[in-house]
Image 1: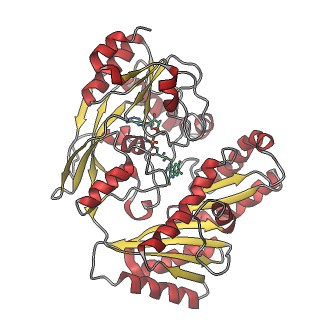
Image 2: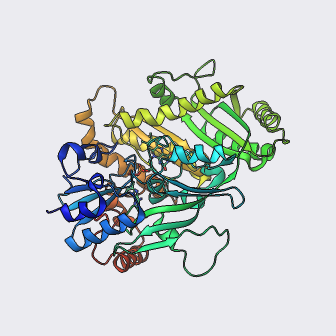
Length: 465
Ligand SMILES: Cc1cc2nc3c(=O)[nH]c(=O)nc-3n(C[C@H](O)[C@H](O)[C@H](O)COP(=O)(O)OP(=O)(O)OC[C@H]3O[C@@H](n4cnc5c(N)ncnc54)[C@H](O)[C@@H]3O)c2cc1C
């Protein structure tokens, strides 16, 4: 393939075709076995993305858009040997504008999530999307996966943080939808179609993000409870004390704590280990509200009622960081143990306790000795049931079991009115199962949308559909 004409248009930095240069773009955190792309394209502007997409279309090449490669569904690298290029957004890192009156930030798609958050904070504003890979995932990837993260209970998921979008469509045209409107009912909401599409409908190149006042008033607690039922009752109880300020309500079972404690610098702050733990955070920009007092009162009354076994409130930023470090060490442990089965189910919040009990029992029946850690975003009903191999089984022996164990978890979620993917997406990993369970009317609609927008089927083929 002659890449010289494209290089002449985009510049030498934008076209990488040697295997050592492409190396860091072909492997994601899931260790997905990528097939070799023909090239990695790294355009520096929206116009250059459009030029690259037009060129790929003329050449009949598939395009795999790529952000920070932290996605957990094998969707950001080509597979199956198709003639494909990777289109990385990693050179598009400009924060184009912050408007404190509109409360908006306009960004390129390649800005790292942590940098979006930091820029907002520097302007005394808040961008609430937050998760364990925020130091390396890019905002375009976050929007394309419609990621959720730790604060969705209060602020919603990625799609709730967007007012406007800019994208290059599969035919190479640029769609400029960078509106700052809080209200807009003029026609279909096109941006919401591209958000969560995992790169199958176009390349997101920019976005207008919604900012909020910075929540200077914040309290964080590590709380031990007897059971997931008690955790759920506690959530509803605490809301009567602190209102709608609860911004994180993360479930961490003992087994997950024990995995996290194998990571450097992780510490468990309570005196004795408990079966079920919660990281609870409440925050508000309203400085006059006695948030800490209100949360303390809520926890004290829950302790009297027997809902809470023990609790500690972070009294310093360092303590808060340590609590969050423990929470994120759980996620990091499961990513680093590449043999571990990761899942991303959600059920209605009220069904979480039943879901956990049923799933843990069904997994033990399927493979005795598995170490099951149901953890995560209890406040959203989004429990990651991650499964570590039995202590006496090696990784190679365990890996063939993962498929069946995944089905066990997903079947239990579906029985309770849940979903097989709450925040990670479908990608290539879950495609076949998704297609097996999706409502036929919905599937047909999705196929027709895809065919209408991506007529040449060049955008991330094999992902979702
Ligand atoms: C330790 C850890 C913790 C995590 N915690 C959470 C969590 O709490 N909640 C959560 O939701 N996720 C979590 N994730 C998953 C992951 O971080 C998110 O899915 C993230 O949104 C992916 O962003 P990325 O930039 O890495 O995208 P990539 O992995 O590079 O790509 C993901 C998908 O988006 C597409 N894509 C990327 N950029 C674009 C673009 N500009 N235009 C069109 N398509 C594009 C790709 O083709 C692919 O389909 C975690 C991951 C790790 C490793």
